Amino acid sequence: MTSCSKRIFLLLIALAFVYGCTGQTTQLNPDELSNIERGAGMTSQDFRSVAQRMARSLVVLPQIQNSSTPPKIALVSVANNSDDYINGDMFLNKMRTELISHCEGKIIFLDRNIIKDIERENVNKATGRRTFGEQKTPYGADFFLTGTIESIRNVAGRGQTMYLRYSFRLTDAASSAIVWEDDYEIKRGKQSSVVYSE
Image (cartoon, rainbow, N blue to C red):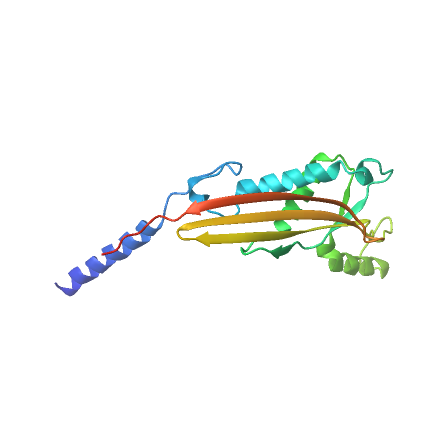
């Protein structure tokens, strides 16, 4: 094989590798379970169901429905005590989005992720480095919203089950009393296929 034909051969292998490794992207419905994600772990359908159910459960709380002024809620990171990597704060963010969209101003959520930026901006306003209209002080929280993710995984032979429990609670910031808690449980099993080798 000449050096030119070797180069062409290597180029064809490289092109086959590049184009062979790229697949077609398909848009999927986040509320449906696809064949790709049929494992024993969490799915997009689970994520959306958990967040929507928790938001519906939380919004009917008397401390929210019967309050003369909208209670102010700050989010506290969710503790993931499960066997899987799950970003628990995604659930809080989705719950907040659902509640802001549908609760008609009955709740005020505090953005504590940018509190240092807010404090710096207020200092700049107070010292004349920024213009401002009405002087405001950042709100204190009436409640903290947080949660816990827990799991139990069992493996026997080629079978595996995964139990996941997502629990969320609302805690009174003044008294530390838990005024609301709800959970969502999922259990799935899967069977590994047998692979024969010679």
